[in-house]
Amino acid sequence: MSDSPQATLTGQLRSGPDKVLRSAGRSRGGLGLAAVAGAFTLAQLLLVPPWMGLGWDESVYVSQVSSHAPAAFFSAPRARGVPLLVAPVAVWSSSTALLRLYLAVLSGLGLFLALRAWRGVLRVRVLATAGALFATLWVTLFYGPQAMPNYWVAVGALAGTGYFLRAGAGGRDRTALWGLALSAALMAWMRPVDAVWAALPLLVLLLGVRRWRRPAPLMALAGGLAAGAAEWVIEAYVSYGGLAQRLSDASRIQGGLGWHVAVADQLRGLAGRTLCRPCTGALPPAVVTLWWYTLPVLAVGAAVVAVRARRPAATLVPLACAGSAAVPYLFLIGYAAPRFLLPAYALLAVPVAGLLVHLVGAPGRIRRPLTVALVTVALAGHLAVQFAVLEHTVRRTTVSHREWARTAAALHRLGVRPPCLLTGHAYVPIAYYAGCSSAAIGGHDANTTAAALHRSARSLPVAALVPPGGAPPGYARSWTPADAGELRVYLAPPPARPEREDRGRAGEQPGRGLSAPGNRRSSPAP
View 1 (tube, rainbow, N blue to C red):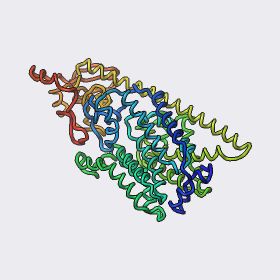
View 2: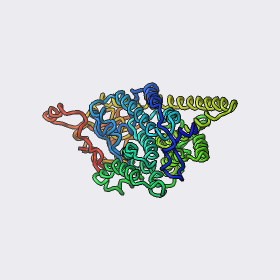
View 3: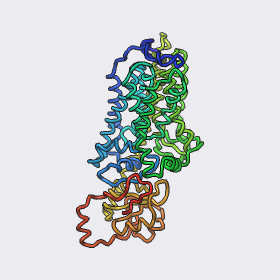
View 4: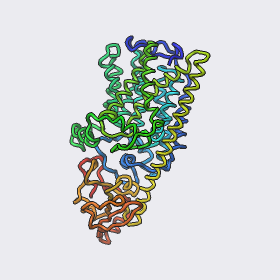
């Protein structure tokens, strides 16, 4: 962070954005950023097997555009960004390996562009360090090649903050204005509410701080957020009963937004629990959570160094955005998932990297070698912990996904083939694997009734999935029990179809047209 006066270009926040870019020359070393992004892509392909099947949420997103299975129920909090992101592959191929390869390459490109947005604000060595810190977190590596929105909100937040600092400098950087707008649109396209939280400090600066009040950056930021969220808002009125109703439903599905201190829940998730709901049990060992406790200390240290050097903007702005992005997932919901904090981690990586570069570059015949040695040892230990957690998480996730695939294959052997309908335990991912529709009569994703399930059974195979030792739901007690992998399955009486109808259905594409994607009140029953 303190390489030289020519290396910064942050200026004082109080002196206004006019001086933010004046003291720095153009940085070089785009190849360094490309190397970090390329290493990130390669690490994903090596450490997260491309053949690892799709998870529950991924099945929902991919099914919206998949040629393999009908669209699953699309609940109120979700947005259409991920389905559009995966569409270039999912619309014509059901290969999970191909989808993972595509997303790994795309996520590496996204990281490169997000880091490049900061060129001219910070030196390349700081940006490369920031990229490496963020890219080597187990949660970043794990979710980079997945069809999930959180990584892309993180990339948008990181890029948008860099473009904001460039756009607020008072020059005529049209690239920065367009970059700010597109970054905001990307965030809102993926998760509109998360986008607002991540951009809130930027909006406060543009509206509430006189020296930062400039119409062009404000219009770019607000316009980008509006453009990205437009489809979500329109869909709210078309399929969810209005915007207020969709927000209310989203809050209910997330357990009711309100004061919930989820810090301990997030700590439990650091051991590789991809979803901690309910979040019980002991906290992970201290060696697993030490880096998380260290982050706030490093952030404060970075802020102190930046303020003392009279160039706080490039440190305090991402810190403010990181804190704002983390607020809802630390204090407003009653459960946790490590991926929720990816935007905060991406933003924190910038000031933390600046502090580390500053410490390593501090002069002193004894102090400098000692600092380099301590930082090297600390980072090596940190990487060892991250990769150990990643290996454990990948192994456990792969096992569960393979079990879903085995259950789907067993269902096919039992005669449950597309077009078909599944409900019950783990019904969404298993239905995707089997090429079936999915439905639930209770819970957060309830979208049908028992009567509708019985009506569906008159025309297509319907099965209820029950975990080992569980009892069948009331509507399925008279259905035929069978084993499907580790699960117990209850098969509805087979539909009686005339021979002519059977011949007519023989040419149909499996699993198409059985559900109405995105319609909160629709039932997958025909």
